[in-house]
Amino acid sequence: MSGLGGSAAWAGGGGSGGTPGPGGDAPTVGGGGDAPVSGLEGGVAASGPGGIAPTSGLGGDAPVSGPDGSAPMTGKAGGISVSGPDRRASVSGPGGSVPATGGNGSAPASGPDGHPSAMDRAGGGSPPSGVAGLTVPPAGTWRPELPGPVRERDRDPFFRDYRDGMRALLARRPEHAAGPLRRVLSRVRHDDPPERLLRAASAALLLGDVHAARAAGARALAVARNAECVASEARALEYLAYGELRAGRHAQARAHAEEGVRAALLAGHRNTAASHHALLALAASIEGDTAAVAGYASAALATARRHGLAQAATLAEWATARADLARGRPLDAADRLGPLVGPGPRRGHFAVWMLAVPCFVEAAVLAGQPEDAREPVGDLARWADFGADPHASAQLARCRALLAADDREADDLYLRALALHDGSGGDFERARTELLYGRWLRRRRRLREARGRLGAALVAFERCGAGAWADQTRGELRANGAASGKEPAAGLARLTPQQLRIARHVAEGATNREVAQRLAVSTRTVDYHLRNVFAALGVRSRVELARMVDQEHR
Image 1: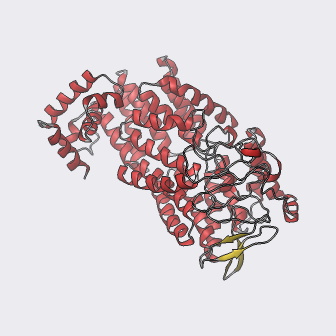
Image 2: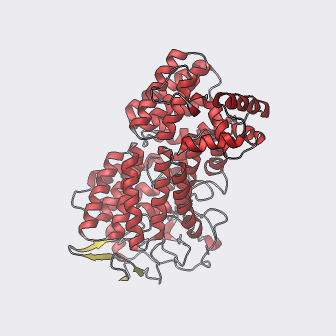
Image 3: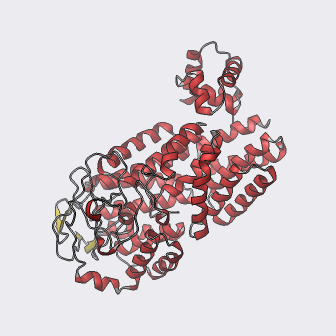
């Protein structure tokens, strides 16, 4: 699914959302002193004692207490108290009172209508196993009746359609979600408050309409800044960062997320900061900065694991796995992503695990484990049939090409994937398909065709700033017998892609046996390639090799 509101329709275990029920009985439990907050009517729940579920996500920054849902909330100036039987929340600014609701938990978990906004809904789901500091309220506690203003809000077509679309997704009926969510987009106005604009952005991301999501997020950001509401500003920046990532504009996404981290920390909202750190890790995984990926992912996971933020944790793990794949470590990537996309209690957050499926399939096939990828491809096929995500069909065709046993079928599927990319846009995903297709053609000795595909992939990767993937493509071009024109004539540029992967693993201290396990090849193959690496580089020991690799990476 194309958005932080993600593939709710395919909820599974371990962070997945259950079938909606009445009354908003699912409390959200956060770590670090966060208190339970009410779920949406038909809340996202995994069963717990008495049918009450710990629903954890990016929400939970603002503690919520009392049967009436009254909540103390910290705004830009800090310590702004928000309370009342209808759970109305506002932050004072020069332009008056601006609702500060929903989002990803940076504002109160329940909005003026008592419902979490887009990111709270997306953030729902059971916490990952092993998360410390989570408690489940006793059975039968904290089940507030929906107050009068909720019924009035239900009569507003905008909020009614938003609610119906989200309920349909959570009930695994995506065919009933597209209509209401599209009507949400048609009803949003330029001068709407942040609450409505951010819900419109969420609906757009759920539908794969990145342009509409960015437009709504940008307007919400402008309104939040005008009202000096730093919490809403941090949430709007998150929507913008994610929209830019989905559009393939990674530099812009990084800039939004960096600004979002500052705003979230200024507002004292650690959970929102964790979400932005996860987005920064995703951007860095495309750009090829492995040290940055590790740093951002670690920062996101430190809060996510402590507070039970399954969505931020899933995004951070996905970013780390994608960085492994970009560096030619498919086995490591497959090991990390397998539990997130497979069935069972360790499955990633229901809103985003589907986004990682194409990455897992690629890693599993390259690691020599294609059978592990077949069930997740089935999940992706059902999602692509929904038709809301414009990228899903192209990614599905690419995944099927990777798994195809017949060369003619694989050829047709790669071409179909590229044709579908033409309709959905996105340089990065198309370039990944071109790279995989070019590699496949090269191994079948169709060198001229391979050169064309790899050259197109290189141009696209360079255009969207995907440095590690561009380096990988240049390696394939060298192996194909065509110089890219940008590689130095000495050093690691002399190595084939497989030799380069082995050299990097050895430089990191791995033994030949460990390298063989990571690359899913025999130890004898590693021995053979390593001897050729030493000869090509003129080194005599692993220490010299590690020094050369380190120097060329600086």
